[in-house]
Image (cartoon, rainbow, N blue to C red):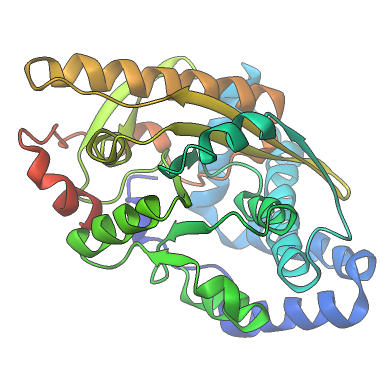
Amino acid sequence: MTHHWQSRPEGGGRFALWLIRNIALYGGRRFGRLFLYPITLYFFLRRGPERAASRAYLSRVFGRRASAWQVMRHIHCFAATIMDRIFLLAHGETPFEIETVGLELLDERLAQGRGVLLFGSHQGSFEALRAIGARRPQMPLRVLLDKQKTPAMTELLEALAPEVGACVIDASQDGTSITLAIAEACQQGALVALLADRGRSHEALRHAPFLGQSAPFPVGPWLLAHSLKVPVVLCFGLYLGGRRYRLVFEPLAEQVDIPRHARGPALDALIARYAQRLEHYVHVAPYNWFNFYDFWQQDRRGAVPSDPGLLGERLGT
């Protein structure tokens, strides 16, 4: 559990994902979900570090040592959302019941025409957000994702829905390219979605209370928001079991301002608010949080960049 999350290999590989894709698409969702049980058992038995990280996380949430059954339920929930990504891309939201909370607040900020940064987390299904794009076809949506971290999954999803790939801003690019792409999207009034709970290997981190202990969170998203001066909205895509999802939108700031003379305290306050809301939804749906590594022991050497000009570098490393 001491390795950084980026050093862990992608689970399954191309053949396993191809098999899941064909089972899901040709056998139907109900038939496909039967295979989640052997998949869950396989990963429970074969992925020791992820199994240990899941137990440690769930033990924090429940206040007692998590059982093997609870760990397997956690893995099963993750596998279910991965399979549902296939159906969401292939068939849209038709097979699902997707409830939205706070969508009108998001609409109000998009109507300003300045663009919106949507900060999510590795919780539930961020993919369910694409259902909002279908309901709001006039709303341009861009998503920041690292294609190189999960190449097999990326290849599969883009094969299912090539138009989705065109909406992705690849986080494996250099920092300057990422920053310019996000800025351009915001200038076009787009909704730009990114995950703000997991730091990359060389990214600056700041700590905030989370599930009873100080945990590291990346600085980059907040410096980006400060640089672009656009509204920031939090998004939590909760998987509620079966075919049910709930998308929750919560406005965080109309504009993020980080004074140069008080950079550290300002960042700490922003990250603490984010961590507080993340913790709230972790308790609402504890099996939805999918950081299968020791989240509290990420690299603690990260520091706040002293110059906003380092923003692109921090995002890209």
